[in-house]
Image (cartoon, rainbow, N blue to C red; front, side, top):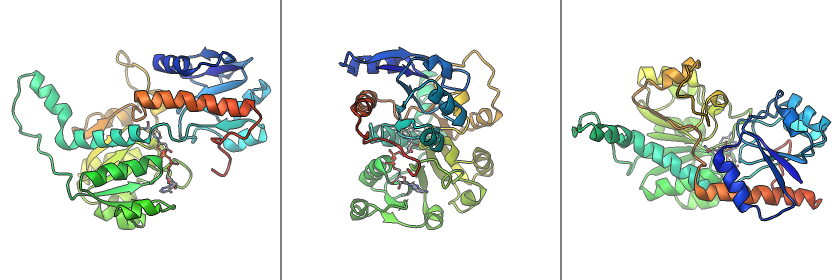
Length: 332
Ligand code: NAI
């Protein structure tokens, strides 16, 4: 069973090799992103293993079918980068890793909130320059603040529990309400009821046609002035230009993003000796109240191990002729 991995980093190679005891697997680790131009590199494979910014549009999927590759194994939870209809037509199965560590991402959302609020990144730099002044570092208590959570699935639920532990009031929107969340005093409300009340808004829903640009000029106008917006979901949940306008007007007081609409051209690479041509992220990087991380929410030891183990299970179920429990279908 030959699996070609696209978009790999040293840590991917390490964890997949470490957790694979099964000698029937042969791995080809590529640094290249999967695109129409690189898909030929999978020739001779039985499966491709891909990540968040690999492109699995109709053209790529048709080429995979021509190469007789029957399986796409996503080593991530989100599947917005896969044309599921095309995969179904080409009879290619798609599997994913739905919940490798919801704690990893929820804790990263908290880390962003803490850093933006108490400005620990600035304090760290100041102290290194022997600047012990507190001016400009004023934060606020999280206790009793109202936190809005969009999406209370695996990650959103852990995030609600963390914020509940800090003494925050939690309002949530999710088309599927969880009784256990309601028992923990999470109030499910409509988005337009939630937005005007939140001091902090955190996005944990998938990117799909209903959620694309969920945060736009209109929804930003409904928010509290000075709101903190955290996005560890997917870049496309947010209209970045609208957010920049919100930051300029002061409507948005803080922005923490671990994902970005055009991240596939930037994230997971060291571009420190290059000119950034994306003027939108370049503008975002100039705001003192914006914290950007490069899609590292998932990046914990526990999550990497779980991603490898679940991916192997998915592939083994497929090989055994079973319907993989983590298969993604058109209606998902
Ligand atoms: P999940 O599938 O467990 O939960 C998603 C929740 O969103 C579900 O409860 C669903 O009912 C809800 N939802 C669906 N449509 C919605 C809508 N229109 N409005 C509000 N809620 C809606 O997914 P999980 O594991 O919690 O992950 C959430 C998202 O986080 C993923 O789709 C992915 O995009 C992102 N993610 C980001 C990572 C990172 O490293 N930054 C890592 C893993 C996931």
